[in-house]
Structure formats: structure tokens, C-alpha cells
Length: 126
Image 1 (tube, rainbow, N blue to C red):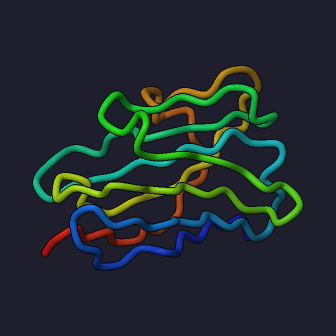
Image 2 (cartoon, one colour; image 1 turned 180 degrees about the vertical axis):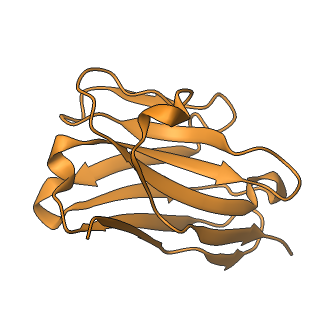
Image 3 (cartoon, rainbow, N blue to C red; image 1 turned 90 degrees about the vertical axis):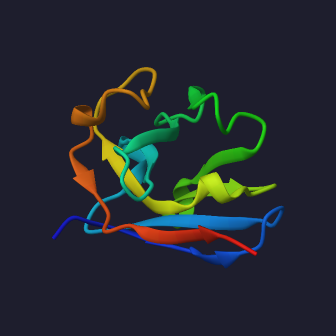
């Protein structure tokens, strides 16, 4: 069974950091572009960051550029999202997803992502 599992979410104060992990089971991530998406209460899901299969193409939402860093460790079959200087508006459920396409990744074309995790809650609050 192909599965993605996110971890690393939690409650953090404004200005704090979290590192989210996206681990795969049943398949290897090295053949997939991986995207991170988030959904805040009452809002649509939005793309946050993505990384293609080689790691040579990385895209960030304008709202998190310079604040979040996406990386992948194919040996560990895991993709990470390092989130620094967190703000209350970063609160939401964070999902990772896998896109089998080659070439540059997209944080806009959510339909390209075939596999999705269940999400991990990130709450930024004092």
C-alpha cells in the first residue's frame, strides 16, 4: 500500500521553528516530486513548497520564501520542510503529496499530485 506520513507538527510560539517530515511507505520517493501544502481553518488548501526528483527545481509560495526550506533525503525516503520564524498565519494542517511527473515541480497544480498524506497540525500561538 502506497502511503505518505507527515510528522513533526505541533504547537509553537510565534518566532519559533518546526521541521516537518514526509515519509513514504510502499514506494520510494526518489521518483516523485514532493509538495507541501497547507490548509488554514476556513480557507482553501494552498501550495507552500515543492521539490522535484533531483532537487534541482524548488519552488516556494511568496508568503514563505526565505522562511521555509524544503529538502529531500532519498536515502531515508523522506522529504523535510524546515519552518522558521513562524507566525500565527502559518497555522494550519500541513500535507505532503507526491507527483510522478518529471521536470520542474509546481505548488499550483495540486491535481498533479497522486498521493497525499493525512496531514499534521501546526499551530502558532502564544
